Length: 264
Image 1 (cartoon, rainbow, N blue to C red):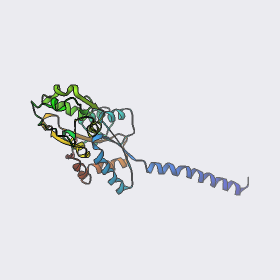
Image 2 (cartoon, helix red, strand yellow):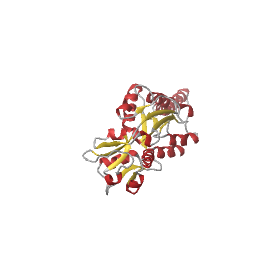
Image 3 (cartoon, rainbow, N blue to C red):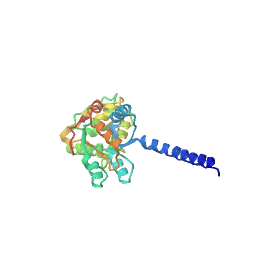
Image 4 (cartoon, rainbow, N blue to C red):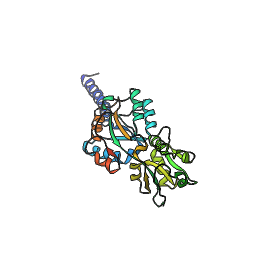
């Protein structure tokens, strides 16, 4: 082979190698931040993600589900960068499994649980001891998250037990896989009543709040946030943005209370 032929072959090989490496480099640069977030956060977090993406040119992909399901996925080595739970229990769970950066854990938001009905319902009740919630549900179902695993369902059961109403409705529950699934049952008219977060009620024009559970009837509703042990620099940037003053109005618009940045 002549010198010219060897030179052309060498250059061609080098160009081919570079062509193969460039897409890999681009893929690494454009890898989205993956967020696992409680279903009740969807409206607010989607808006926050859109703002951050406009500012940075980087992308966010969010998986919304019950905190219990997301925690179990993290345990199965799911590739998430940030976890936002709807209660402390499931964040405690992943922390004990050494799946998060403990130093990054902070209390992000507060919320309330409410009793909802379809928007045209005439149902009324005051949620207190002695209330006849069972009669109000009637032959229908009371929609709620799974009371043994979904945070909103756990808060609902705690409140109902505290107020002495659990026995009235235990056999009438329609337990859903997430709080948004419970919301949908009421929104579609498949259940006459449901227990969801105040922030969920705000997100759906087809439902209305008919009563709010007293704060003292259930444990404080706290949404903690943390980076996972797999989080990179882009994830840290988005994590900081979610906790910033720029993000706060989106949370407040949806009915959340923005908490002080402190480790839970």
